Image (cartoon, rainbow, N blue to C red; front, side):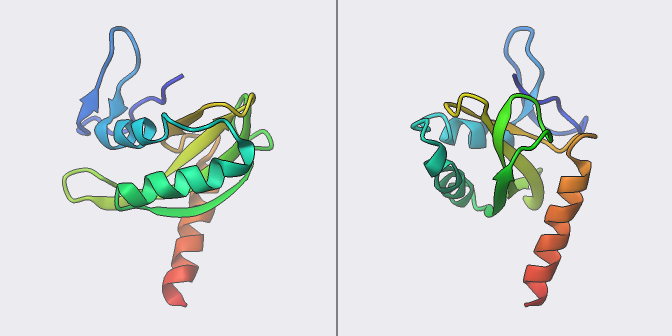
Amino acid sequence: MLPTQTAADTPVATTAGEPALPLELLELELSLDGFSGDVENFAEAVRQAATQLGGDFLFDLPASGLAEDCLRIAALRVPKGEDNALEVVFALLDAEGSTIRVENPDETTQDLKRFAEAFVGVLERI
């Protein structure tokens, strides 16, 4: 399942009939494509993918109902748009622990996005 696009002017990649995925998230998802399926390696795989894109791994935690059919969710900041501003996105480990998908924050994860932004604010002050 691919996330839906949130900004109308974001460059996108499309496949026949599937929702558009911003290019930055597509690149992140492709770098996670080789995930081994080991739940214990989820955070490290996501950290490496974020670093390859010039982004930051913030934290990961149990999905606990924040997203359907997921075991874990990781918050990342990745460069997006023409100005490459760092924006929060989520990497989600599916319920089987075998694949990772990437999503923009939506109404169900808006509070987690605000927490991630506050987390970044604290780190920047330190």
